[in-house]
Length: 124
Image (tube, rainbow, N blue to C red; front, side):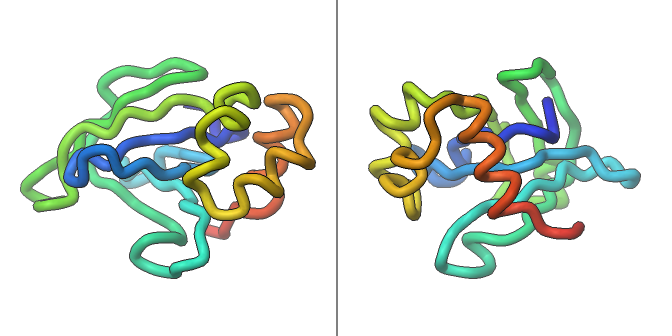
């Protein structure tokens, strides 16, 4: 997990529902915290905090297993894949807010991550 990146993920409690996680970090209390961009406001966008533990960790992919007793229906295993510009232009830009705009202004994967960090990082 790299807090300088943005990742796409599927919500385990809503099959095929994809979303974006920006700047994921493990807080002092062990929760996974990240920003979810969007125009809809909470609970769909904003800062998300999940209780559980990282079960697989890498720079471009990680998995977080929620404590289902705490998370209830929002539990399960979340799988995060780092955004890359090719996949973003081919797929992600079609389902994410401002996708076409973002694809037009970002030429590289690094620029894509920088764009999300600049526009969608909240104070935790």
